[in-house]
Image (cartoon, rainbow, N blue to C red):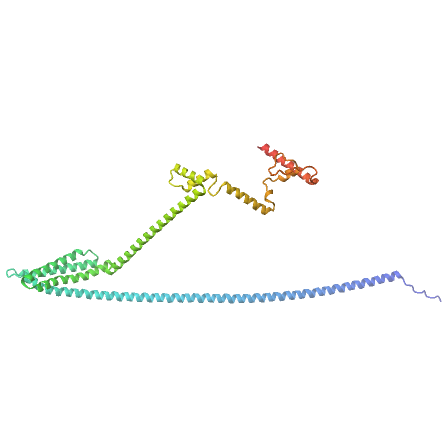
Amino acid sequence: MPLAPEPRFDPVALAEAEAIRTRAAAEADALRAEAEGKAEAEKIRAAAEAEQLRLENEKQALANERAALRFKREEAEQLAKIAEAERKREETERAREAARRQAEEQQQSEAAKAEAVEKSSKRWRRVAQGFYALCAAVALPVQMNAFYDENAKYLVVAPVFIELIALVALVGAAAAVTAGRPHWHYRLVAWLGALTAATINIVHGLAEYDPATAFGTALASIAGPGMWDLHEHGRIRKRDDKPSWRQRWAQAKVAKAEESRRAAEEVRKQAEKEAADKAAAEAAEQLAAARAEEFPKVWEHACRLAAALGETTVTETVWRRAHLDIEGAEPGESAETIRARNVAAARVESARTGAPVSTLSKTTNAQRAIQVKTPTRRSSYKPTPPVRKPGDTPRFHPVARRLHGETKRRLNAAKQATEKKD
């Protein structure tokens, strides 16, 4: 019986199998890692979404809280505004009510005062009329006795007629005062009637009776119409709003004080003006003396110039022109001041640049001209600086020489173009 062949191992197959196993394990590891990565990413994403949701919820809660606070604040402000408006309305109502009550009280007071004045005026009028009747009763007997005649008894009515003239004239005057019409002629007629009756009483009383009777009845003839006229005089002053003697005296006193104040003010202004004129004259004299002492040539020329121009004094215009003629500049300027200003400007420029004052020059290419070539004109420096010779200093770099040549050619071309234009 033949023997079975011994199994043999193929290294290539084994290597391939091992490679397959390794690749499968690697793919499995990759899939597992990918799955773990996806799971971890999903977990992280979920955590991030949860955190984002939590933050949004917190933000929304904070926004809601802020909105609630803002609503409460606006509500409180609105309530405060409403309360303030209500308070102002109540204050306005109270002020309006107080003003109304004050107006009513004032109106009542004025009405009561007007009523009292009217009542007093009527009482005064009645008393004046009663006094007029009493005076007429006292004065009429003497007048009637004066006109009594056995052959003409009707003349007894004449004194009554004279008294009635005064009475009717005073009634007419009262009507004229009430209507706002002229009243002086009514009052004049009333006084003429009263004086006539008084004259009759004096003449007849002295002739037939005693002086007391004569002058007493004459006074009665004048006192009755006079009292009534005083009443009308008061009405006239009230109607025309004429000031009383106290008011006129107070106004005269105020006017006198105002006049005294104005006079004192005028005196003060005049004194101040004189003092100012004196001070100005003294200042002008001092200025003229100072100018004559400090600028004798300019002052002498200014005096001649003022005389030539017809000026009595050296005015500012004359002085400015004289200074410009002599010094060549406006007042405050001269050759010395301009020179000193230039020196000071040079010092400031030296302080800014750090260069010595003696090396400052307005010529921008002064050093270049001396270092590069021999100058064609004498130098302005004192003493004259030595002229540099070849070999004294190192030669320029070729690049620097090329740049210098190009710059020189460009400058010459620009100069020639400018000359052609001209």
